[in-house]
Every structure is written in C-alpha cells, then in structure tokens.
Length: 386
Image 1 (cartoon, helix red, strand yellow):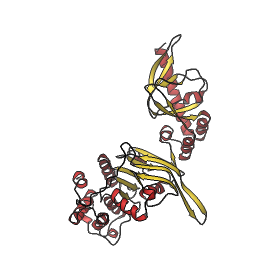
Image 2: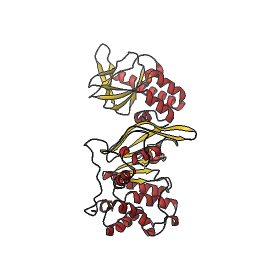
Image 3: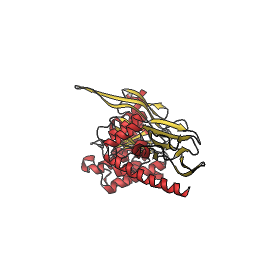
Image 4: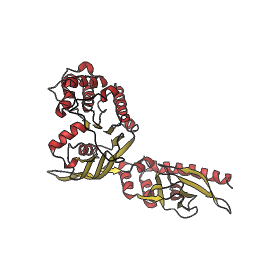
C-alpha cells in the first residue's frame, strides 16, 4: 500500500517539491540557533546556540526532560516559530529568512507536521482535514484528493470514520488522523511532536512501523518522544538538556549520569585526531584523561619482557579507555595507538571525570566493574604473551 500511496503521480502542473541540496550535505542544518522568550518576568533563553544536522533518510529521536527545549527546537525547524538568532537551512533554503506567507507555502509542500495536540479543524470531516493541505498547495487533481485521503485513512486504520467530525472520535484516533494529514502531500520531511503519546501500544507500534517504512523510502523523520522504548529504535537520538545538545558519545559511554551531568561533560570534552599508527597512550606513562572513541579503531598492545609490544585486542567507535588508570592511579596498563586511522576521540580531563563519578554512584560502580574486568583481561593477555 505504501508504494502505491507515495508514488502516485499528482497533476502535472503541481508536482510535490523535492528539496534540493548538494550531495553529501545534511537535509536539515541548524547553526548556532538561539531562542529567547520574553514575558513580564523578563527574558528566558530556551535554546542556547544549537548546532545540529539531520541527513536524508534518517530517523532521529529528539529526547530530554520536560522544559529542555525539544518542542521549541522542532518549532524552529518547521518555521512555526523563528529563532532569536542563528540560521536554519532545509536543503539550500534558509527558512529563517522566509516571510510568513513564503514559509506557509514552502512548509505545505516540503514538510509534514504531526502536532502534539492534533490541531484538526473541528468543522471539517476527517477526510476533508487530510485533503486541506492538498487543496492549499494545489497538489493532486481534485478527483484524486479524496481518493488519496481515504487511502491515508486506511493506512492508519481510520477509513471507516472518513466522514465523521474530529469531535466524534477519541484522542488516540485523532492522532492517527493527524499523522495521515502530515503525509497528505508526500513530504520529504516529517516532524512529529510526541506522535505516539496518546496511542495504545498496538497503534503506537503500527505508527512506528509506518515511520520506518517511510524512512526506507528516503524520507527524513525527526520525532520528539518521551517513550524510552521508542527512542531506542530510531537511527540515533538528539539529547537536549537545559536548551543545549548533549554529546551523543558522552551519553552512550556514561548513560547513568543525569542529563545535566552529561551536558557538563559535553562542555568539557576536547576533540582529538590521530593518524594511522600514531600512539595515543604509552604503557607505564601517567594517564590524566578519559577517552571515548567516536570514529575509527584503536589497538591495545602490551610490552613483552625485553622485546617489542604485541597487539592483543582492539576497540572501536563508542568504546572508551583510560578509566582504570584514573580509578586506580599509576601508569598506563597498555600502549594504545590508532589502528588504521584516522581515529577521532573525545577526551575528558581526569579531574572532571573523577568529579562526575563522585556525583553519580551508579556510574562509579559501573566504571569500577569495567576496570576490574579489564584488569583481569590484561593479566590474562600478559600471561599468554609472556
């Protein structure tokens, strides 16, 4: 059904827009986006210089606690709200520069939006709500618009309610219709704010499977969610804390830190790059950093008595090292170098790392457990290579 639905030919004079962009460039780019709201109590900064990018055909979950800036961020991307400063590009279009009328037309052709509270027009039937974006953008022939609306309703299992008003169905059913409406003009980008928050588990699963199918067709989906199970199934997550983006590698390596602690670590990390074969750590030398690999591979080598070192294992993106020395003290237990290169690493100062562990007992225990395992592996490897 998806193939027939999203590859139907619209009227020749009104083809859906395709976002133009240079090969290899992200379909969505946010550069130093700041949003400040002002009320009687004064000014409040919700987004602090956000840099983010989303690739074509990517399924991204935007996560974070309430008040972290998630909904404000996607409102910037959709043009529903404007940044106080910064730039937002969708393809090659600077949407922050468009007028309200230009933005409405551009958005209608290029972006499907699933709102948190449905936003269905109460005086129109469900089918008419879905036909409205087609009418506004003059897409599809008038003869095909209702047919397409009914197909979209069938996709979300609401075809039997096509001529009902929104008030005649439940909140969960209204959300399904809102998703169908977001797909009306076959947009290359879908932005959804808690799309499964009002759905039962079975319907939420069907919505997720629908999004997966759309991503496979090359659509980009950006979804705000509080559902931890759903967040684990997207291609990647963008974690916000206090209106700033948390480094994804920090969040993966130290998942038991609070979001604020992760954000602190994000601000303190230093990016490093090593060429193939370049040494990162030398055995017995002092260590004063915690390292997380973000791309490439490193090899871990042990010094043979009276001879050259020998590589015993390797690590790749998302793995970390340096925690044993920081926890136990003393010199490095092994030599670590870039295997094939280049290798990208983020490094956290040892004092900051120990301070974070002092604030998070669960993280300290996890690191202690890992240190014990790795020390045992180190001893075993030395015995085999003696």
